[in-house]
Image (cartoon, rainbow, N blue to C red; front, top):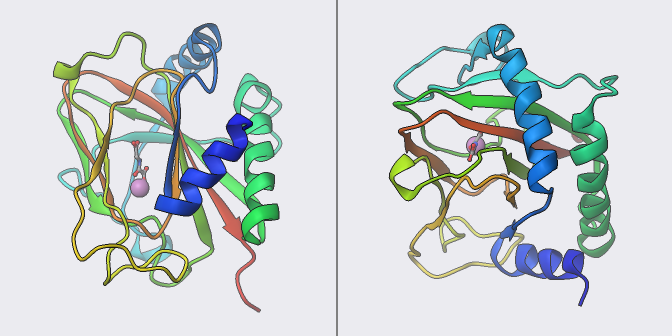
Length: 210
Ligand code: OGA
Ligand code: NI
C-alpha cells in the first residue's frame, strides 16, 4: 500500500493520521533556519478572528507568521507542494471539496502552551483538515509540548460516524520531520513546552456555502 493510501485510511478511520519523516532531517533544518530568521517578525497569536480576536497568553502562548500565497519559498517547495498531493488524494476519496489552504509558522517559547480548542470558528466552518509539521531537532520527552488530540465521541461524531462515549487522547511528540493531519472539528491541545517548539501549522478549507 502506498504511504498516502495508509494516511488516507488512518484519517478516514480515526480522523487523525501521523506521517513520520514526511520531510528529511536536512529539509527540516532548512525550514527551521528560515523560521529562526523570521522570529523577530513573528506576532503573538490571538484567539478568535476579526473583531473577536483577543490575545490571551494563558490560553495560547505561541508566536506566528502567516505564509503568503505568493511565497515562492523553500516552505512551498519542500512542504506545501507535497502536502497538497496528499490533500488531493483525500479530496478524491472522501469528496471533501478542499480548494484552499492557509499556513503559519509557529514558535512556542519555553513555558507556553495552547489550551484545548477546535480549529473551526463558530462563524465559519470552512476548515476541514488541520495539519502540523514539526521542525524540532532532537526533541526529548522532558521537553513536553505534546499535541493531544481527542478522538471523535458520541457527542462529537466524525464525518457522521460516532466513536465511543469517551476515548483517551492521542499524544504526539513534536519530533522534527513529523506531519500530523486531523479533522479540524476534533478537540486538541498543546501541552506546556519546556523548550522552544517550532512548527508549520495549516488548514485545508472547503468553499464556504453561498
Ligand atoms: C493550532 C494547533 C497544534 C500544534 O495552532 O491550532 O492546535 O501541535 N497547533 O502545534
Ligand atoms: Ni489547533
